[in-house]
Length: 143
Image (cartoon, rainbow, N blue to C red; front, side):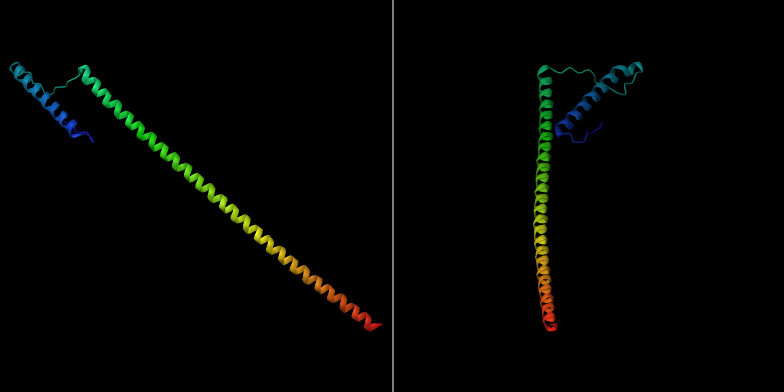
């Protein structure tokens, strides 16, 4: 007698009872055939036909279990898709924010460089004016 993992107590009890039935059949057959020197060592029941209501009930139970399993798989798939979409949207939003931050930083750096350039141009103009003024003063001294 083997025990299957995950069986309900009812299934285990049914299996146990089935084992008792085949054991009882073996004993009965041995009582009949031992006197002829024949010993029955194992009994197997095959080709069982269940009454229609029981067969339908078992089929409905199996179908119901399959439908539940399918629904669970679909639900898991939908949750994974939703999670993927959320991750994708989050990643896109993060990239957009990074892009905007880099763009703002670029604008700031460009403004700083323009300011530095204007400062240099102003200093250069000032130096040129001083040089021209010095040159005029030197020319006036010579004359």
